[in-house]
Every structure is written in C-alpha cells, then in structure tokens.
Amino acid sequence: MIRLPLLDATRPEHFPDPRKALNDPNGLLAFGGDLSPRRLLAAYAQGIFPWFNEDEPLLWWSPDPRCVFHTSSLRPNRTVRRRLAQVDWHVTVDHAFREVVEACAAPRPGQSGTWIVPAMVDAYAHLHEMGYAHSVEVWEQDRLVGGIYGIAVGRLFCGESMFSRESGGSRVALLALAKLLRGWDFPWIDAQVTNAHLVQLGAVEYPRAQFLRTVAQLSQLPGQRGSWAPFTSLAQVTDQAAAD
Image (cartoon, rainbow, N blue to C red):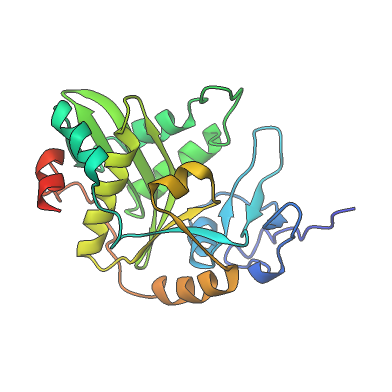
C-alpha cells in the first residue's frame, strides 16, 4: 500500500523533501493542497510540480532523473531553418497566454483526455496575471500554429507544455523562448519528465539531487517578473533563425 503525505492546508509553502519521493511511480511525492499561487510558486522553487488527471486527487511530483533544456544549446538547426524558409511565421510573447494553455490542453492523437484540467488552466492564468507565468506564441498571420508556456521562478523557467498545429510550431516556440531566456541569464528550462520527443529536441537528464541543488540556487536569483509582451525582438522567426 502506498502511503503519501497529505499537504497541510494551512502551510502552502511546506512540502515533503522531494528526495523522498517514491520510486514507483517515479517521483510521486504528496497529494492534496490546492493550486493557489503561493503553493505553486513554492513547489516550483523546490523542484516540485502538480500533475494529475481530472478523476484523481491533486498529486505532486519530483521525478528522478529530471529532464532539462540548456538555453545555451537550443539553436535552430538545418531542419528548422529549412522549415522557416517555407513559412511566413512570426513570434509573440505573452500575447495569448490562455489560448496557448487551452491549445496545450486539447487531447492529442491517441489520447482520450488531458492532465491540463480546467482548474489548472485557471491557476496558471492567475499566475500569468501576477507576472509569473508566460507564453510564447507562433503565428501564421492571425492563426496560432504553435506555442509553449511555463512558470518563471527566479532565474529558472519551468516549462509546462507546448503544442503544434503545424509541423515545427512547438519547436520554433521553444527556440524563441530559449533565445529570450539566454539574454536574461536563465540557464535552464525544466522539462520535467523525459520522453523521446524532448530528447529529440535537445533535452538532457540530470540526477534529481543535482537538479534540486541547481534549482535551489536559480530560484533565489532576481528574475523577470511582469509581462514579457514588450520584448518584441522575437517578432520575426526567420530573422531570429538567421541571427543564430
């Protein structure tokens, strides 16, 4: 029988030691609590994130190993450059946050549901209004063709999800995000759980203990709270690819 700690409703910043998360299922740490801004920000600053289905209690995770993108190594390759030469796309930041989250929540081929339940959408939209959650949008004229969103805690960006409606849409969003974060000395994008697609995009794995040590440092550094919409240097995706 699995015995999980129940989070204290009166102490939103308090979580069990993530190094004590279960091995099976990998990283399951605790249940309960809520999706309040205080609890979510405290979780990400400790290397913990919520992940649950609509018919489950609120579950909190810190898997081992941890999947990470280095912003310094995410740059357009030949395939991306070729794709960008074929399309007329542009990129914005924090212009359509909820639309990106809802697009990420849409069931994917072969899936019957989504873990981005309505309560999650509302919680991250609240964090966006507070200046902690951000999105990158890829557009073809006025049609959203790709995007990514996540949470910035100190100088760590915690990626939550990305989507594509056209081939390469999510990759371009990820590359644009990495370029923006590099300029602010954000070294990592936390990608949480490893899968083949993330590895293909350039993600690497770190042992949880090493990940947590780095997160403890990055989360305490001054970050970039507030809307990122004014940063329009990413407006032309093709120009950005050429610049890199």
